[in-house]
Image (cartoon, rainbow, N blue to C red):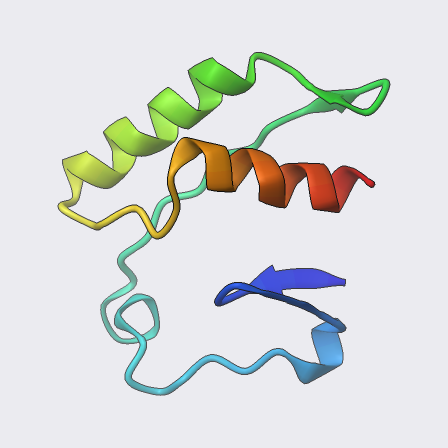
Length: 77
């Protein structure tokens, strides 16, 4: 199961549009958030670093921090 473009789906169904900026230009950032006992570790700091990285390459954040928290909760559940 993966999360792509606002949806959870089986990896076999994932499709990236050929005009996707990350696909064309390689733009992108990632943040690894460890989870221990079903709790994200230092989530606020990770979300802050994610925003800083996005700002650094002038890429808009597709989600607010509360939306990211909700997505992560769904992943963990």
